[in-house]
View (cartoon, protein in one colour):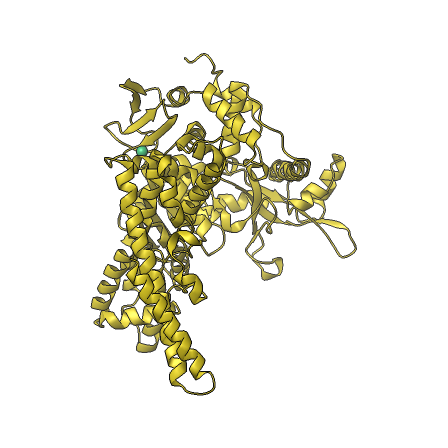
Length: 631
Ligand SMILES: [Zn+2]
């Protein structure tokens, strides 16, 4: 065992969970601390502790990847660079911190604090305002944790028996009730408030956490009353809010489900219920199953189907998709009721998830069953069988078009086209468009036209003034180019080549500002800042350090690896630069040509501005000509 390492569990116990958003990662002190930590916790030691099969092989260490199932080792650790990288299915890579983040499902700061604790490196303290804010969040968090145990105790009270009865009626066991920490909020509007007062606790944290509110007279009352209480945890298992189900099925007692209102800790659009529990299973199987309700999730886990999660509310957001991307799932199954409401919900979910470019399929349950009923009545087998028979999402939506009347059909086709527009890969979109045309017996061109109309003409806005469009590359920051996969690849190689050889920097820099991909642009920004700092190197380690906990850090090692198959970084970079130059000229000349045509049109209309427009058109054509000459 490496000498520096106390048992990881000790270090973890001493590292307090942190609010990672409030730490200034960009300070020099912070970067130095991270470098010191990495120096004292060599990558191969950190990895070997969690992956005991890691073996030395030449200059590298190799093992089967801990993040996906494989038989031949494609997971490599490079001690010289201080990085790890999976050359297999997940293609992930990074440094010590990202390794702990991924394997232990930690936030960046939590992983960093664990490493800091075991290497004895002190992290710079936070600023005072940030400490105060973080103390407030900690207090709100604590009041949620306390509320979980308070609500759970109420289950044992005579009044709580109705919540116990509800769980039993749904076929959910006591074990699952306990595992998911289900509780009961008393109907009396003051139970939690009284409890907090009896303990001598301040009410502010409970108010900040959405548990207590003040009425018009400023009198505090419990937000949740007479409801089954289901704690909702974030990805790190911290309780951030509740889902609460009514137990009287009369409408006077309010909506069926009430969630915690949005608070500093609780953001519905960024949470996936039970993902903290399901994560390891999703990762292992490469498969995530999305259901609609809390009880569906509990029933699935009770039956031993543990890769099941739920989105809170109806719509999936880009953030949900981001969370699922983090799990590395290669397949996502959506399970919905077979009725019209379920169908609508499936569409909404697809809208958020299609940009993910993973395999997505849909199960619509027949006969009015919800997954909870099916699972508690018949166990895992029929549910798993449904998953096996899931239809690819495109088939699901196309099947939905069958037998519709003309008016209805037009509306539904629009909805399908909207979904297609969400796909990340144009090639994929085109092939499905062709398939849709064939099924509908329509010319593909009219669907394409329809799709363009729905998107409101997705052509990129050209630079506003003709002058800025005419400026040759290196002189002024370029406007972002329209995205497409080839352009993405060019920027990926460009970043990779620069990571291999920073001396190429000035050749690539003129194209930084035109990068339309936010994640890559973040890396380019960081490189640019390092370039401006005379004491800094530009390499994998320094870029990782400077990125802090920005998600782009997960791209750095894969991009570096992606560039290392090329014979020379210089040749690789030159290829990308000439591609980008060509693209820029195409884009700018297109914009000039459009502006010139517009001026010509104005000139042709006659009127008092006609002469000026004609002169502008001429000027624009002159610039266009000069640009094409200079190519
Ligand atoms: Zn892997």
